[in-house]
Amino acid sequence: MRVAVVAGPDPGHAFPAIALCLRFLAAGHCPTLLTGVAWLRTAQAAGIDAVELLGLDPDPADDDLDAGAKIHHRAARMALLNVPQLRELALDLVVSDVITACGGMAAELLGVPWVELNPHPLYRPSKGLPPLGSGLAPGTGLRGRARDTVMRALTARSWKQGLRQRAQARAGIGLPSEDPGPLRRLIATLPALEVPRPDWPAEAVVVGPLHFEPTSEVLTVPPGDGPLVVVAPSTATTGTQGMAELAVETLVPGEVLPEGARVAVSWLGGGELALPPWAVAGLGRQDELLARADLMICGGGHGAVAKTLLAGVPMVVVPGGGDQWEIANRVVRQEVGQLIRPLTAEALRTAVREVLAAPRYRDAAVAAGATAARVEDPVRVCENALRVVR
Image 1 (cartoon, helix red, strand yellow):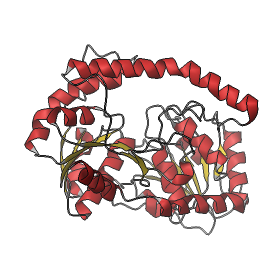
Image 2 (cartoon, rainbow, N blue to C red; image 1 turned 90 degrees about the vertical axis):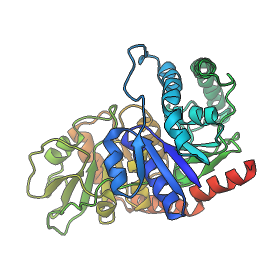
Image 3 (cartoon, rainbow, N blue to C red; image 1 turned 90 degrees about the horizontal axis):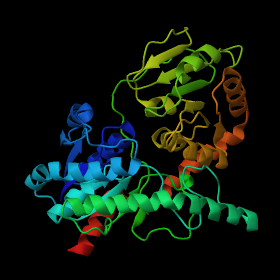
């Protein structure tokens, strides 16, 4: 099977796409990754055929203040730009990242089946949930259900506007205005991070997190017999700033942390930190660190949270914008960690002490990670979907 995997350059989307390509390769298929130039060499070094996703640079006509226009109209323009190179690949299937909608549009223009990749929980609206992004659990009782109904009504206008913009963008490149949607939606998360809904789409399948380590380097942790605290600042532009700096200044062994504790800051392209002897910082494999960690401090991005749960490690989550607030609240409801907002030294000290001291957080993290046993294989899902349409 020849498959193209299309994703933008944000690490939270590019890395799961690379991980999926590696899964296709391992199954004997021929994947090609289309993404931003920043990760082409990384993907190629991992053995993946990777080419530039054309059209990522903003056009002067783009309205970046309008999220719907940014996603749909830019996607339509990018679909046209990328059709020629996708046609040359003689594809059997296109897998398109959920926010890199050009992949699905290009597949339709070529008459090729396509699948949507969601590198996080399913974020489509539901008649049984409060609006996604609120961080709220589904309401219970008359008041709770009424609250959710009102909130859904308040956000429905934006969703409908987005559908109209998508229809307009599709029509502008010669596609039917009504979007038929993908054959399948790969929901690359842990069941523990999903919220049950009464209207789960028939085409949506939970396939487990798709993780890729962009380096083979392993950070050398300072010696010590105390707990290891990993700090992973957000890679998103909307993430909380200054988390690494505050953690190194605040989490002093013998004062906040137990004697012999260590702090490891794992980040992509991080700045310079003044490091005490009990701390290390740099780009290193997070899976290696988490295998030894006692606590993770992160921004609430889905990738870091899912990776931490797979390792059975409890968390302190410092969410920024985007979906980080939603994920952080799901972490709290699973009782695998605590949430801090806003970030202060005192709040960080308190949360770290409490999570390290209470075994129930680690027990809950281990249980959440174990739900990975209930997911389906994403490659097999794609293979079976193609058999249905052939």
